[in-house]
Image (tube, rainbow over all chains, first blue to last red):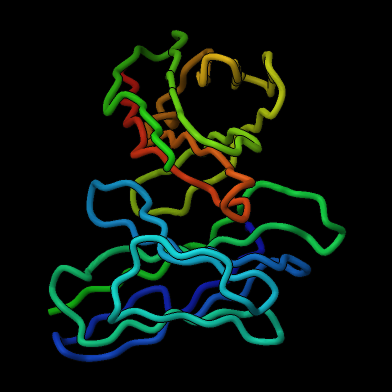
Length: 115
Length: 111
């Protein structure tokens, strides 16, 4: 158990709909990263938050947005869903409050299927 | 940007040794990481190198040469359960300590 919790584990929704994926980082970790992994593809970085502020953006579509709340949990919002958005979405966290960099710890992912 | 290259697929025999290579280019190198990922599961951390040399952890070792932008993951005494994808990642201090992942090497262990 990495200590990173993602909900829901599975999500099936129709095209055009909007969904919200939730991530609770490891206790004390300030950074949250979101990644998308399509079938047989690598991890594509979407966005990073650090202590509530957006730190970096990757290949994130305009239909997607995210935020990190004061309690450090994060949500990834996907709207106007298309079939091609079907993928595993991973959240990872790192950087404990003591300021020592650590590896990224991954949640179990949310498998999104758009039908 | 960051360019991370690793072979797409490898096959090795149970009990043998396999070496998975990774080359990278990054402006603000701040560590190289290896992860294991079984299909449909989360990546799990295997090893970390920030200084040149070899880090050993049981059956797994990882090597880094910063001047060459090169790392390898060595797996000894291969077991069937080692069949998985192995991801090389670099952290870049110039972009907020981002983790940039390669596309992974799919390792198949055969009897």
